[in-house]
Amino acid sequence: MTFRPLAIALAAISLAACNKGDSPPDAAAAATGRGGAATGASGSTGGAGPGGGRGPTTLTLAATDISTVQPTTIEDVASISGDLHPIETVVVRARIEGDLDAVTVREGDVVRTGQMLARFAVNEQESALRSAQADKVAAQSDLENARWNADQSAQLFKAGAISEQANKTAQQAVATALARLAAADSRVRSTSIVVRDTRVISPTTGIVSKRQVESGEHVSRGAALFEVVRNDVLELVAAVPARAAGAVRVGQAVRFVADGRNFGGRVARLSPTIDPATRSITVYVEVPNPSGAIRGGTFATGQVVSRTVSNVLAIPREAIHYSADGSSQFAYRIANDVIEYATLTTGVSDDRLGLVEVLEGLKAGDRIITGNVGNVGRGMRVSIAGAGGDNGRRGSGSGRSGGGRNGGRASGTR
Image (cartoon, rainbow, N blue to C red; front, side, top):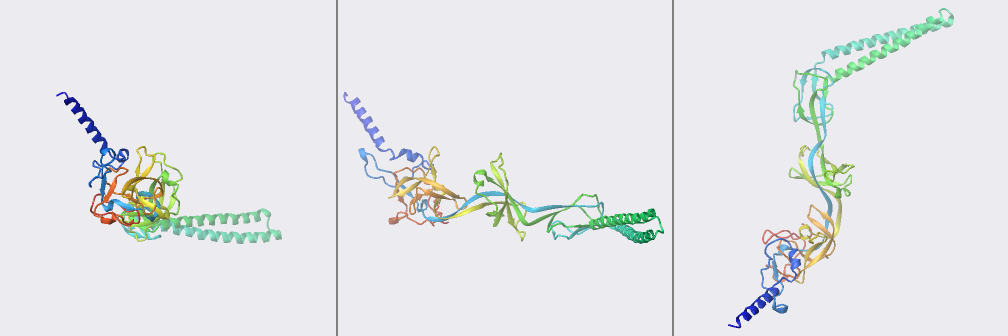
């Protein structure tokens, strides 16, 4: 009975020693691994470690969870999105007041520049034009008579047959006749314009999107009659974050998707200022649409291609992890079937392919973990399920696998 407390104390010391031997080889590293309640260990543990504890945990991965770093080509792009609008929308208004004699187009009709859209009744305007033309003819006749009288008066004055005052009166009559002719000519031009304006014509080539009048309707001057949109060129208005604005230039190519189809365009204009509310700049992209395949108001997403970078090492974005304080980036590299941390310096990010350029930290041929495999720690051993002797080595051209767990993407072309 006197030895019972001593036995209990010895048992407690032995249990504490066993728990210490079961700690992971790098607990801090495992804590920074990707989320997951389980460590992913499925194989047998290694031999006895120092002090009688178990060896490093073995992490079993699918072949699709690993990528081999290889040189590839990526693009420096800035993502954009927005609505496509016709490059030009014209509201056709009445230039005169009157009754519409005919309306010749409807919504959806394709019209050309100069095509008649509607016609006003022209009886009153044509009568005014004929009157102005008659006044012009009379003014021309008066001018000819005044000039003849002035010539005769000048000769008589030289001969001393008339006084200087009579001669000046004849010369002034010419100036008066010239003024009357100019006034008559102005009335002819103005009434001709009114007659011309009785024909409502399209100012541009496009499609009639609105028709707001009917035949026989009385219309006031300035009233909106039609709306014509020019959709052979569309414009995408999009916002680009200020941090990426420095790489966007006028003339750069743009790839985007609209209505499930791929289209291209170019940067036409840039806003000169940054919006203080959104910290972004507005980019205007011109999109050729000669066939009218894209309709105005369609939502589009795409990328502005700043530059193309060839023969660089790039890895999937999901393979990059961050330290607890966010000050550094790293990837899980597999060396001799053991996981280690590779601190990275990154460059260009290709949003379209989901790849990030690696400037430092990895070299061609390195194997990295790209799949979502749960908690990962430095020093864990790796086993590739179903890989046999090859142990999961594969090229960077492999894509995602439908089987296995959360297959990783390759780091090369997809």
